[in-house]
Length: 413
Image (tube, rainbow, N blue to C red; front, side):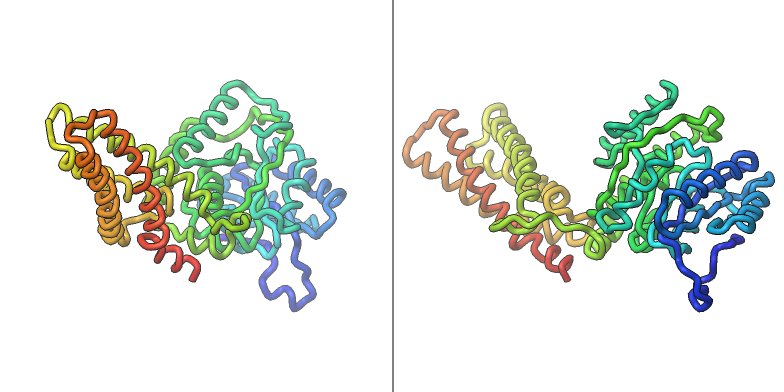
């Protein structure tokens, strides 16, 4: 249950004009800092922001007089609203207010106003214009000026390195309390965000990236608040749990990011004569192919030398094992298929593609054997490398136009 001073959705009948920007200030037991924060923010917006705005104080079940201060400010100041939630959680508060707001652009900032307000208009301008979908203040971007202790600096940089290594995140600062999102994006993206605490920001940004949304980064001037209420240790543990949960969710394919990409994502810029997505697929396929070829050659050498298998049997076993692994890797990495749906069908089709590769490599070995009764091992390996390169090209074409073609057609539909 929550109490709110936000205007009702039928307010348009009375001539109410929806704001362009709704700035949410999530708070918990901030009875002292809340009023000066809201008054300073309101004065800045009134003087420098050229569009209608609202400031919404989102109280996360405070146990002090924070809710009373918020309600008083909402009655005294035009353009200030308050919401009180019965449960704690910054993510819960943001999700609640953002999904209820009628503003075109939704933002939030911490009550301590550690981020200089001069970055607010550069933050939201690309969203108002439609150039970007989300925007974040970054303390790690070039041009930022940050004042904080070494401990927090190390933790922040370490956290972002973990995100890059585990979730392949490309944004530079997930934790800065200074972000914005377009409302049409929020209504589709936020239902997928499960976290209700501090990991909410990270989860939202990772899902936005995976859906092909554009994230605008703004360098900020930021001064650390020495009286911050954030418990660093418990927050770090919760973030690591969130990373593990999100990694599993993305790996299982249960999140409908494909549908979100179709609705809001930005397609790659077209290149004349190159089908959409082909360049990226070729790069990823080549990387998988190099790994598969090295594994194939290693297995072939092991089967030929220590075990003493004949060239045809060694080629068959090595190619079969690497073909199964190759199909699985290309399924996920090159063509972006997640989850177990149709996995067996794709592997069966991959084995058919394997048969083509087997024919090329076996035929090459048979031709070599016909030309020389005892060819040197180096010549044998060279012939196999050339045959595998040809087989790789054929494999890519068959995977793109046959094995994974149905997925692309369904995505377009």
